[in-house]
Image (tube, rainbow, N blue to C red; front, side, top):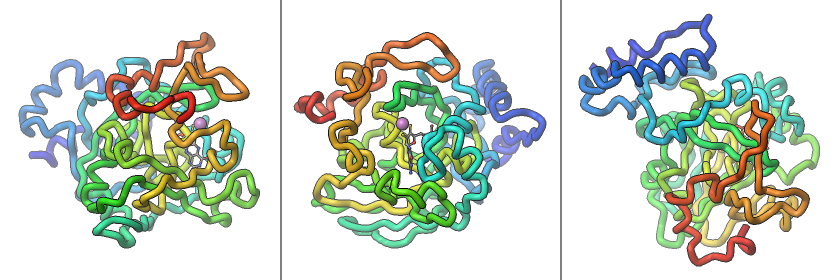
Length: 321
Ligand SMILES: Nc1nc2c(c(=O)[nH]1)N[C@H]1C(S)=C(S)[C@@H](COP(=O)(O)O)O[C@H]1N2
Ligand SMILES: [Mo]
């Protein structure tokens, strides 16, 4: 039954752009056809597991309408996949779409280390396949004061972490991107201290909004967006969303993070979107949505305050920025 429905979604229309395909699908879902299909699979439409993992740029299969949807216009596929920050592939936003195309992401191994009961080297598929995939339409706010609205596909990081069984002294989770200067031309220069590192407090990592993303616009992630897996946290500045992860470590103390190491007074560990705390060199009060000219007001926690403000209730956010 599930397979039948999946096939009906998986229109491999190579002459249709992913964005058009995605819009059609959303429209289809709105018309009520989804209710019919949803009935057939007993409400499982929005959660879906794979038989085999699709290759780069291939459709990830059935994912129903997301309850995570700000209801704002999606940033087009072309912008999401050609205006990127991924310094391993160059510092210009137009670089990664060109220089990352031959990036090898299959096979891919993720090392799990530190304070957990299930450390080891996991094949990407083994790490991700047990978990049903979800669609999450999230606002994406870069520290550089531009924003997008992006339909990610992924798995709550909490689901993956639970399976790795962190120990009581695991207070933070640290992440590392691949270090491979042969493939990543940006790593041949000391723009950042490679590999790119990020980290989260355990409660942030376990928060239901925190997504380990494997896809965008219904397809597997393109290399420039962090294939094969990257972090997405919609209430934080984009730089927390570390791409092409090869290592996850459970640690007791706050781990060092790349942008914080590069400029401590400019990029804090928390990096929560906050219009009231300016970057030392520019205001964070407003943002430009990619594709628009007008400036929008930036919202506290990027508009996700109802969900996440409690995590930081006791903290001075001008100090812990
Ligand atoms: N490894 C790595 N991850 C990274 C970056 C990077 O340079 N290297 N840039 C970050 C920044 S600043 C942003 S805004 C987002 C951009 O993600 P996107 O290109 O998918 O929009 O990725 C983040 N993750
Ligand atoms: Mo960013």
